[in-house]
Image 1 (cartoon, rainbow, N blue to C red):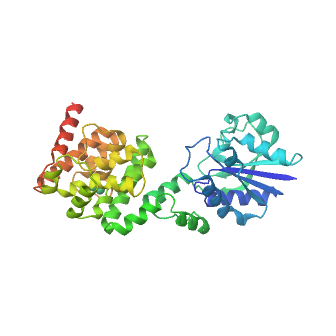
Image 2: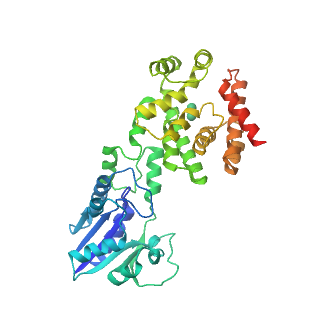
Image 3: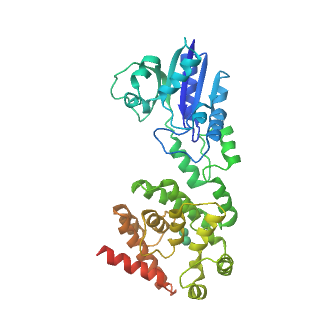
Length: 376
Ligand SMILES: [Fe+2]
Ligand SMILES: [Fe+2]
């Protein structure tokens, strides 16, 4: 008897998972296969998408390969990080005389000797690997079966970011899984739905550009990528209102803004940072204080800004839809450091305000003065 084991986060499940398992079925011909959805991957942070939803995505994506697949909920029962040796042990107990095959991508292959208890893994299972472009096996220190064929270079993390930033589901997600993602409004689709309905098309496009820019800087400067994208998506949510609407909303919800009266009189659009943060908290249940403060501070900055706040401020000024003369300089500065990027972005914002004859808010000036005092 042959038992195949395949584990993954399936966050989301995609055609790469499908192709790999399909090839393993046709070449290994197992009598049964256990697909283990990770409660929490040993290599990734815990997903905000529930175990059950990810298991459902795995089932929607993979079930047509064979009726012999069991979408196991073992990890949800123990509710902790589960290692490959435990999957093998689990299958071994259920099928004491079976030959067990552990399916992995070649991206994992090099690391198996560093996994927990590799000797147990090698003694109790045959490793089956699918070759994935871009991940070469460097050193053959153990035996494994290499599946025929090459498997698509698809990465769940990239798919997640694509959906989050663009609000659309890429074609490498099978249709049934895409339907589930849409139905459950995963990966920020709920935010996109609201933005699309409430912002003008140009503002919505700008928001998506800022999300991609914030993602880029969060990756470069090792900030919380998900937080950066959420902050970017919601930073201009308040722009769904005109000046009168912003003032009314701020009064109704008792939103605290420095120099409120002056701002209402001279530049009410500046209220949209604080209003957007309020919308993020109330409508989208954003609890992360860093996200909320980044949204609030993206209009005027602040004396002390953390990395996420700087990233959003810069991304809003350097996104690909920005066409002002010095944008290339601001982008180049931001690639050198967040502080240089912040200086360039803030300077440009102030110059723009002066050039267009608008009122300079005291908090904006204060942010600038603090920044240049620090940089010297
Ligand atoms: Fe804004
Ligand atoms: Fe913006």
